[in-house]
Image (cartoon, rainbow, N blue to C red; front, side):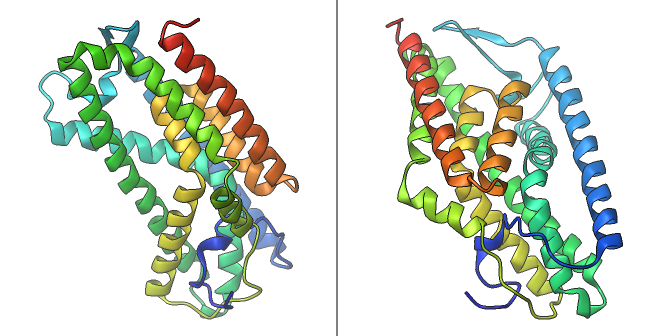
Length: 276
């Protein structure tokens, strides 16, 4: 691994406590705490707004959320924009606890540039952009599946079982060597970094986002399958992502999360298939 801030993406979740900068660290933690609180409150408010909208009952005993379709008088572009905005706010609340240590370490690394705060904000914006673009892809896939389910009753009846299979597969993913490599990369950070510029900071944030999206693939897929605006599922996903990255026993936590996902997914799939 090189010593530049824009090198490997594996330091996206580094939890190592950097030395020095205690007053600045307190300010940074305070700002992160404020952003987390605001995004969490906005997510709860959005959930309340979505819950007040009528969902469409579907064959198979489930309901189709209005998050996947335009509301009355709304265009598809407007529906996509609404979903992506909701997704971005939700991702700030979910990912900030695990990405904040990496952003703080990056800020320390570029302290000598004289623009450390600005560079860190650029990296954070690039990181959020990656997750926002993923939200657009999730909406397109979800809207396509919702449209097919409304037109093809057999698919609609199979959706609860398919959602369970997604959760089961996400749990199994936690035991793979691929996941282990990503998670191990989250625990490493370069010892130092070059004095960056805006372009380097932007690329750094993009790399952080791409690495974290891969590492969170299972949690993201489960969230989309079970309920993208389910507050309980979001809270569990946030806790699991943060714990597996920041806790000393992160690898064991990841496997425990995987076991829970396999069990929950299998139960949901069998229940959806009418076997329970």
